Image (cartoon, rainbow, N blue to C red; front, side, top):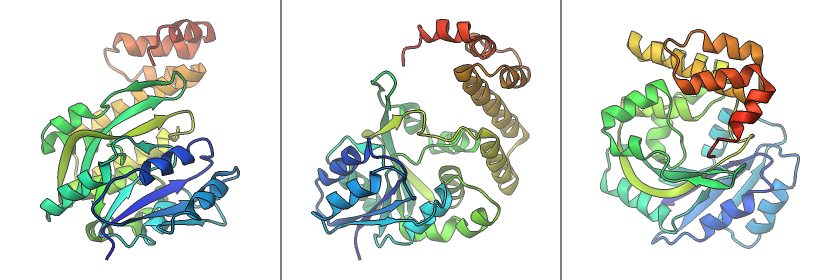
Length: 302
C-alpha cells in the first residue's frame, strides 16, 4: 500500500499550479508517495500545465472532469482515486514551504495510530499586497484540543495543513449524505465529523502557505451558515455556540460588504452586532461609501 497520497483539486489555477506542484516535487521523504489531481473542468491552461509536468513524473496522476462538479463532489471523487494510507490535501494555488512537510506529517500519524488526522501550521500569502502573515493558525495549534474543537464548531478550521488517515476519513465523514443535501464545502463537514469521532494531533510548525486572493474562497457565506447550523443540530451545540456562529456570520458578511461598498448588506449585518467594535464600525462606513472604503484601504496592512 502506498504510504501517502497528495490530494489536489484544481480549477483555473494556471498562475499558481506550477509553484504548487514544484513544492511537492521538492519534498524529501523516506517513502514513495503519489499525487492525485482532479481538475474541475478548468477553462484556462491549468490542466495542460499539469499534464506537461506529469509526463516527467509517473507518480503524478492527473484527471480532468468533463463537467464542473463543485468542491465537495470533486473532493470525494479525488479521494476515491487515492491509494495512500494517509491523504494530504493541497489546493492547486497553495504550496509547501518546508521540504520535509510530508515526512513530518506522516511521522506524526505513524507514531499515533489513534489519530484520524493531524493539523499543522501555515502562513498566509496575500496576493494583493504580496505580503505574508506568518503562522496564521499559531494560536489554534498552541491551544488545547478542546480549544481546537470549540474553534471548529464556531468558525471552522482550514483543511490547509491537514493530513488524514484515509480509512478513518472514509468511515467517519458522511460524504454521501452531505452531497445529497446540497452541502458544497469540504473543510467544515470533514473536520467537524472527525473532531467528534476521532483523536487528532496538532503540529505547531509552519509547513505550508495558503494563498489568499479574490478567488481563493467562496463568498456564499449564507450557504456556509446553513452548513454550520446543520452540524450544530447534528452534534447538539450549545445555545452560546450557536449565537457565536451567527455573530461570526454577521462579522464576515459585514467585512465582505465593506470590500465592495454594498450598502444594503452592510446595514443588514451591522445592526445585529451588539456593542460593535471600532473595526466593525469602519467596515460599516466602508460599506456605505466608496470614498470611505478607499480612505480606509490606505491604512490596511495586508
